[in-house]
Length: 157
Image 1 (cartoon, rainbow, N blue to C red):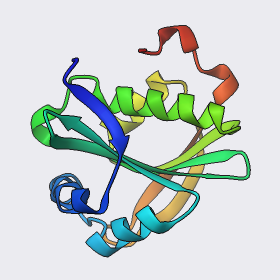
Image 2 (image 1 turned 60 degrees about the horizontal axis):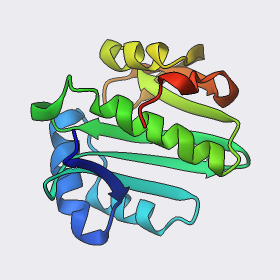
Image 3 (image 1 turned 180 degrees about the vertical axis):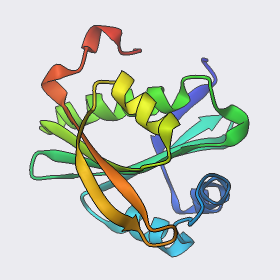
């Protein structure tokens, strides 16, 4: 879709980001937490835009050669169109340029859709954090991806 672009978030985008966050997660991040992400030197918060409307976002950190995916969401009305894949693949390219070798993330045990996406992109399950999510006492599945193993020819340009 030509009318979709991924760009760094600005303070004025936070209301739209928070609106999507509340639709997507049982215990959403606070608006203050997203603002804090904008201020961290190692954090990146990007928004996905369609005709100037924010329809998704991705937040990640690059520290000591590793990228940690902190948060990603797509507006429910825009799901099943490859947009999360697009954001992740763009993040992979950026991470490689910044010297990251590996991507790490935690995902809710019951979030099978996200786990399927991550596995399709090459992530491996590394372990589990028991009762990681305080709201539901749900376990977190730990996953990682070696950026050398990404099939770069399959990534969208």
